[in-house]
Image 1 (cartoon, rainbow, N blue to C red):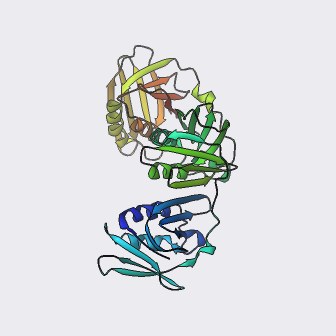
Image 2 (image 1 turned 180 degrees about the vertical axis):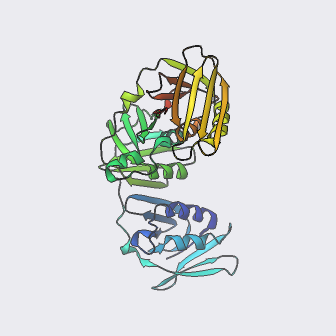
Image 3 (image 1 turned 45 degrees about the horizontal axis):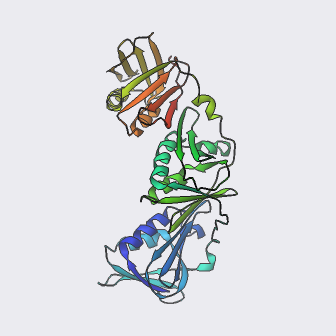
Length: 371
């Protein structure tokens, strides 16, 4: 195998592939596959649960297929800066990588392509079509309430996002049991996929955001327990989580008597100040809403306390509730609008945060014990 290519574009592709490789040194899934056919180079990587399959145009000299240790190969490619490089299979053991314009040169051992895992094929025609910017925007809102670490396999659904396709809409929901994020979006009318629901690993959705940055139409396929996302050049896929997602509609549609509009900037400022004195263990802050003002406060028995106020259009009975600041900080920071609504009842029921300019998504927080 031998080909020439632009180092910058090639590095971007290998960097994307690296994130799909196992980090266990020299395991079969820590390798990437390079498969050259004419001027088309197919790059593949998988850790057994998620996978990457992309085609890039190169100047092909001799067809062939090899598997290379991705970590080491990526570090080699990073040494080249915006220049032509030559990748050549010299013998039965080594591949050379060198510059087309200077003396820099590397040799790296490769594996036979037959040692690489079998290619995962889509194998179905029915799919969803969705604008990439729309999908990325949905993901960025939906993943906010994903659990950082599920303690056992039965809770793995909390480290994923529930996706439901119904008619020409898709809905994405995440929860860690104490907070919830919900977003709905439109798909292309010509999409042909039966209504269904799946739970997608958070790790995979972060790769979707990272890889599909351009404005384009993405195709989403679901085959058995695998999801595929594809554009013209690249396919990425993931094994789906098994299990039943909690009944999010019950929490989402809970009636809430009170609604207050806040400026995102004001809430961010107050939270940033107050959490400096919050207890680092329970992360509790107190939100008190009374005539004309919202008071946000926090205290640490060993360090002290802090409070801040936001002028508020409210003239009802005083309401006080405690929340984990991690949830409200992350949710308010995610808003891309100037104002949001906070809907609530009392200290015991969930609190709903909704952007005022786009009510197709929202975030929900369960209150903590005030004591």
